[in-house]
Amino acid sequence: MRRGAGLGGLLGRGALGRGTLAAITGCLLLTACGGVSGRPAGPGSAAPTSSPSNSAPAGELAIARNETRGDSVYPEIGDPLVDALHYDLDLTWSPDDDRLTATQRLTFRATGDAEEIPLDFNEQLPISSATLDGTPVGVTVEGNDLTVAHPVATDEQYELVLEYAGTPAPAPAPSARADFAQGVGWSITAEHETWTLQEPYGAFTWYAANDHPSDKALYDFTLTVPAPWSGVANGVLTSSTTEGGQSVNTWHLAEPASAYLVTVAFGDFQHTELESASGVPIQVWTDADGEALPGGTASTPDAIDWLERILGPYPFDSFGVLVVDNDSGMETQTMVTLGDSPYSLSAAVIVHEAAHHWYGNTVTPADWSDVWMNEGMAMYLQGMWEAEQEGIPVARKMDEWAAFEPDLRAAAGPPGAFDPTQFGDGNIYYGPALMWQELRERIGERRFFEVLREWPAGQANDTADRAEYLDWIEETTGEELSSFFDDWLLDRTTPARD
Ligand SMILES: [Zn+2]
View 1: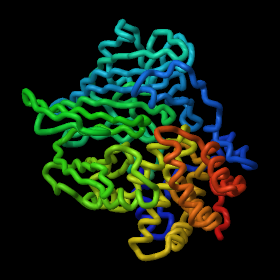
View 2: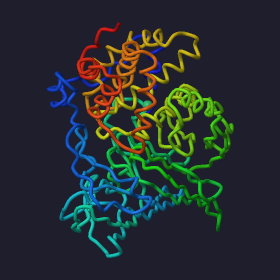
View 3: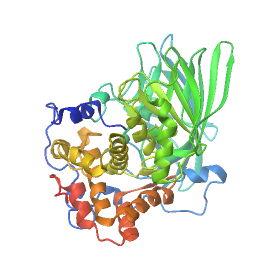
View 4: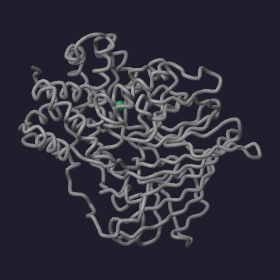
């Protein structure tokens, strides 16, 4: 996600201008607090709940197998019993009455033996039909928990089909950010268009998901809406037809994505096709009544080119920008979702969200305590890009950020053990960005950029936690960095900078 608009303002004012942040009441991640000597002991380093088996699903679905986990920060969301492999979402949007009608086909693997199947789904969308492997099955929904009354066995694969309909509503966000105010999940605009933003969770507001970053799955979408409106989602547009006044778009996402990286929008869109210098196809979807390439979206190929020079080949088959009516921005996989505002559509934010495709999307944190792995590097790369545009050394850009970073850390906690009620605050962005600059100065240009390129390339379509990442950096660089990372990720005060 891009940093909040309030933080953008912060840079201009050069002072912490937020007085409404919730009070910090001590460390909320006890295991992380206790881990200050040695490797930062993020709970993400817990053992996986499943072990590899010999019965990998055939063909394409094998890429979506994961070592699923429960979450240390938001344990009420997701369940490691389920390893979702493929979601087929057939969604019809009726703007006249704000009604979503859906058929969902979920293929999943059970990671253990259990009497029933837990998923995340909201009771606002009543389920009219449920089958498991073709047989009707009982389901109950309470709050945000869906339970399917059927036993499952370790490493067996199942297909759950649900039919449901209703008017989705966003869920409260665990954040103080202004652009989170309307909640997470499915949102409906005053014009009855729709969009979704769902980090750290919120997919459950419109489909039944294992709504956790450790579980990546493949997706197909069939999106139906009265023409001339159309539906946009992740991946590649595989067909587009209009029949009986209804527009039907099908989308296919060929690489697995965590639920927080899924996007769907219905609205009156136009789209423009672009291409990076290396041949990555790029689509920009935006309001049919506005400019075809609003804000900095025309520079999207330049953003991919610039990032490829630093990080190596773009890790997916396509890229896109989807412009919606909000004030946020999200790195939704292969189709970033950007609010229709000058800041969200700036070239800097496009660089940031594109950078997440290496840091966050192809390699994804296995636990929300490690969201700094996404935002620190995306922010550092954004800082490098901004410094280049301004004709200043990146070290000077980091000096500017260092002026306010201690206040962010004090307000929302250390980047590696943040206050769970302040998800996505500035602390997870700027502190880790400063940390990467310090590492760069410590290990030198050659090794630093090797680390930047080789980590996402080696972890393609996977998840990782801080223990795996930081151990790998130490092995790759030959440096002992335990106290360095501890200080930057877990201290409540900013470490001294060289
Ligand atoms: Zn971000």
